[in-house]
Structures are given as structure tokens and as C-alpha cells.
Image (cartoon, rainbow, N blue to C red; front, side, top):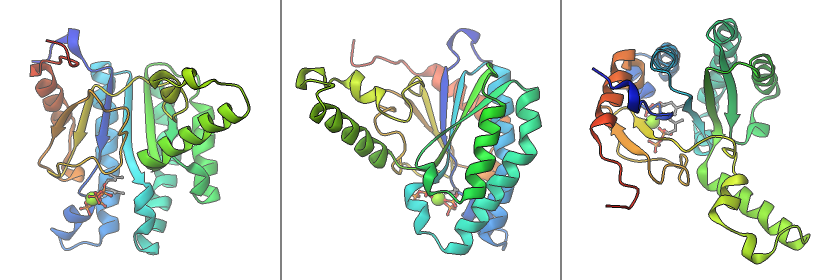
Length: 236
Ligand code: IPE
Ligand code: IPE
Ligand code: MG
């Protein structure tokens, strides 16, 4: 049983293990990514049911560009198909789509599909689904630092204006509260360049299943685990 009073406002998920899921079945890696799309649907439905306000999904990292070209292309095509087929559901479910990451690096058709669905869902206001695409936290913090340095050079800011709040306001996540709960599937205990700044006080739950096997019940179980934690934020 989950307590309705302490549902995380923001859940972030590192969706990992698609390749190993496929390999364990003797399938090509792309089949694992395809199967993972179903788990994305389940995660969205579970967040809707719980009344979570933000769900951020790590779908493609800055480092994932280093994968074989064929896998990168398959992922981009899959993403476009997912967005096109999911747009009507997002509208029906009152879900707003947003994106973080270096989207100018995405192929033009992927970017266009993405921007179309973002515009279409812009005034939906139940759940905000944030896709991290071509996202890397170090790149994000570096870009924010550049903007602040430019602001200093231009005289918009003084040295004493540089605070954690100013830096946070220059990140891609400026308008998004920090995650309360960070889930990673496939049992790996690392953050792989994901939201390094924003997860300072997130509770982490590692799920020992490959992402394509992740179901609504697994998300509910992660929230139940979250509700057992005692968040202290450095206090007593
Ligand atoms: C996660 O699964 C999806 C992406 C990173 C795009 P992986 O593709 O990393 O699968 P594993 O970790 O190799 O099994
Ligand atoms: C993290 O998974 C990136 C995404 C889930 C999109 P990776 O599979 O790329 O991370 P590593 O290589 O295990 O650190
Ligand atoms: Mg992986």
C-alpha cells in the first residue's frame, strides 16, 4: 500500500538493459530497444495513476553517440515512431512533453517530430514527461557555465550574483523541480552522466531487471521503497 501523502513529485529513470535483454533472448539489440518502448508506456501510466507531476526518462546520452551508427539510427527511428504513435495518447492523458539535452545534434526529422509533439501537448497539465535526449549532465553544466561567463563579460551579472540558484536557472531543467526519486534498471549502480546537479538529494532505487521487463508494479514498488526512506537533506 502506498501513502497518498508522500508521492514523489518528480521521478527520474535511467532506462538501462535493453541490449542485454535482447542478447539473453538471442535477438538483435534493436529488438531490446523496441521492447523498451512498452515499458515507457507502463511508466507513464503508473505515474499518471499515482499523480506524479514530472517523469524524466534518460533515453539517449551524449555518450550514446559513440555507439555503432546502425544502433544510433535504429534508436532515432524508434523514437520518431514512438512519438508519432504516442501523441494522441499524450493528449488523451493530458501529458505534456518536454525535452532536455543537445537536441540540435538529433537528425532533422527526429527533431521536427519532437517539436511537433512538444507544441501539441504544451498546454496539458497533469504529468510532464521530460525526455533526456542527447543529454549529458557535464555538457549541460558546461553550457550553463558559459552562459554565466558571458553574462559576466556583458555586465549582466556581478561576481556575487553567481549562486547555486543562478546556476540552476541556466540548466535545461530550469523550470523543473529536482527529482525526488531516481530509478535505474538492470542493476547497475552508477549515474552515467545523468542529472548530476539535480539528483543531489534524490533517493536512489536500483531495480534488478532489464528495462524491457519493467512494469507498472515495479514503479509502484520503487515508490514504496522511497516512502520507507527518511530524507534528511543534511539536517538531523
Ligand atoms: C538502455 O539500454 C537504452 C539506451 C542506452 C539507449 P542499453 O542499450 O544501454 O542496454 P545495455 O545496457 O547494453 O544492456
Ligand atoms: C545510460 O545508460 C544512458 C541511458 C539510459 C540513455 P548506458 O548504458 O549508456 O550507460 P553505461 O554505459 O552503462 O554507463
Ligand atoms: Mg546500458
